[in-house]
Length: 229
Image (spheres, rainbow, N blue to C red):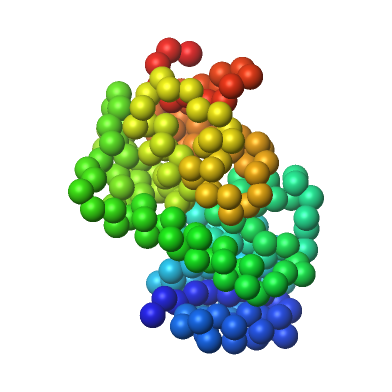
């Protein structure tokens, strides 16, 4: 049985979400503030985390940032903020998806299923090489890591899928729309900033790891991986 961590300070909403998900066959641990959520995360292994944006003691964004330093566990942000900039901030900190209050629990379940499916497809496809390599970089399918000269950095599910897509065919140019459809499978509702933010985050990780620029924007078209600047 898959276990989820739900960190939500609205107690009635938290109970309703947990009851609904438990009826769907999931185990749900509820915490009502960021510090309790962090403590629970450190004690147990979770298959997915649902984080409210605004939490007492430690807010959801800070908690997301700290979790991302240790793990690539799928994270969905639950937020009352619907502005694009707010959503981008969540994605920049490593969230895989977000859902805006008020929402239908069936929509939340659909997003959970989509994210778990992407995660499981990424980690368990058969007859596929474990590594993709390009000019010193090694992408590890099983561990969702990017490696360079003995050092490694964790990738989120969506970061991995984006890296895999572009790294398989260096120098190919892909539009933002194509990247979005392949990586997010329509889960978020298309916005080109979603792709831009994820690539920006990957660029930063790769620069920290290798001090090289692998992603290149192609004006009016999209992005390519590798080759000369």
